[in-house]
Image (cartoon, rainbow, N blue to C red; front, side, top):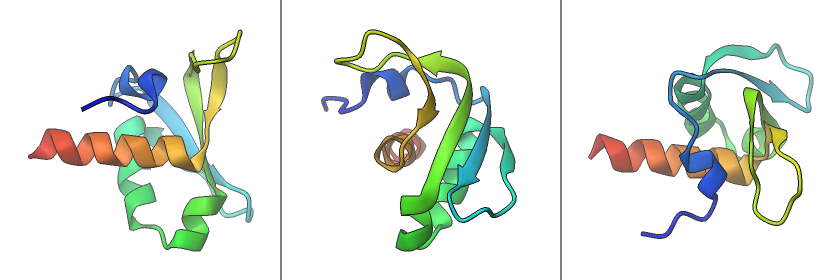
Length: 87
C-alpha cells in the first residue's frame, strides 16, 4: 500500500503534539496517537476545523522546507495508519 503522505508515516506515535481547531475550542495536548484517536471521534465539521501542531516539523513532498502543522487530510492519514497497525 502506497503512503499518500510519506512525512506523516515517519511521525512516531509517542511524539508530543497539540490538536487545535479553528473554532477556538480548548486544545488537546498529548501525543500524535492521542490526536489521531480524538480526530477519529470528531464529526465531519469538527474534522475540517482540526489541525495538529507538531513538536518536530515534517517534510512535505513538493516543499522546500519542513512544516509544523498537519492539515485534516494528513491527520486522516494518521487515523488510517493507526487502524491498519491495530489489525
